Image (cartoon, rainbow, N blue to C red; front, side):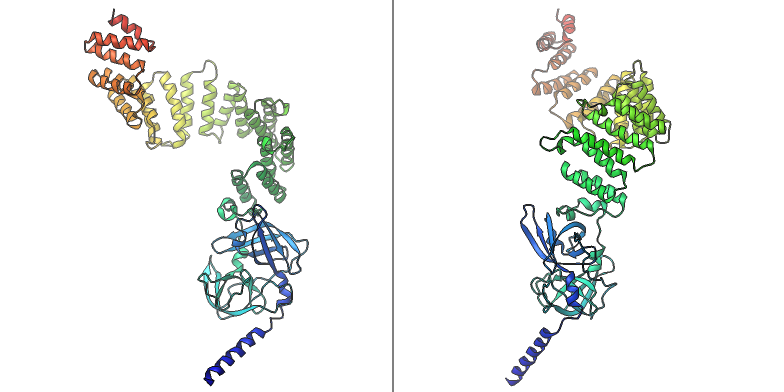
Length: 575
């Protein structure tokens, strides 16, 4: 019994010794770097509170990601009770529960120096909590295990229990350098804790594609832009599809403030002002105000580039887009004529294919098809010719009075040729356009060949309408077996369309298979009892089967239902 009492006394003395151990001398000074982070939700309600700490004198800090999830605002409180807003999210990793952010502080912040490399196993380490007074309670322990995360960064297992409110506190070396962010044991064990590498947390940065993923989109606090301007422009483009008009305007303003020498920011904001002017206008504010702002931004962009031609091109492009989208505008600065004048000045500076392409588009919209064709052909004779520019030349030629259909087909040939050999899926609409012109010239065999090519470039992913139209071409070239196969494919895809059943009947009639033609007619009439053409087809079948009475009855029914061509058959067979 005396041995047990002695053992308990020894343990108590040891515990008291640990509790009375003084904090390292540096701790009371470095504690100024530890902050309390409070986050708020959409309606201003507090959603979380926890620790964090500064890692730079400019207000960059790290903490736990969970504190910020679903937050719309965050405030940090230093040990003096001063409060500052979190202005930016700089980087985050939801999986490892770390986040890096920027605090708006009017002065330099006390910060913790980040230890280089990995802290060795067995090292004595300290946890420094948030304290407004001289630190009397702190954590102490050793590194018992090290694992690697995200490359060479360490994840540390510590022989140190976490008291309430210590999660996300800094873990420091004996020299006072921070290396870990305190995390609790996931299994609930109280006697051990973990430290996530501060070096890793400090390395987090937002890339262009990150800007819209859920790790960042769940946080309503403004995000930092990617460091590289080209990546930032990609992020700006991605955000356009995720934000409403007013939120995106704030994003554009922020981009311009971050990259004030980039003309792209002003051009993007000019476009946003012009196309979203109604959404941006406040109550009682005229949307036209934003058209003026758009032109101001175009002017601002022009001051940041040495290419005068691009200045006029960007102006023409914006005016053209707005004028074609809203034909009710009366402002003389926003007409097709104004766009034409601006692009003409661009071409005077440099006769660029890009400028000619836009001028062609403007001429096309104005109905000046010959001038549009000339511009498109100048593009086609340059090194930036594309399937689209050849197609637009074909459309301009098509709208020119007296145009030769063969010339249009030749232009479409070039559009298809630009899509590769064999053509890519991009060629599909150009091939269909070419089919139409070949049918007008009664080039049925060539039209069917184009239908086959269309089928091939789409890997057979076609609908019932495709089979119906290819059947029509095959029917006209006399390939009745091929026509029958196509119309039956259309029926399999859409068995409730009576037109397809009637077309099948027509094919059977040309093949002189009147029994099957009648079966097709009856199927069509079961779906559409008032289908006039089907009664005419029924009559034709009866004529060939020498059943005159039934034929005339069918013709008469077709006439009653308004068939426009049955009168000739009635005169021929029923008089």
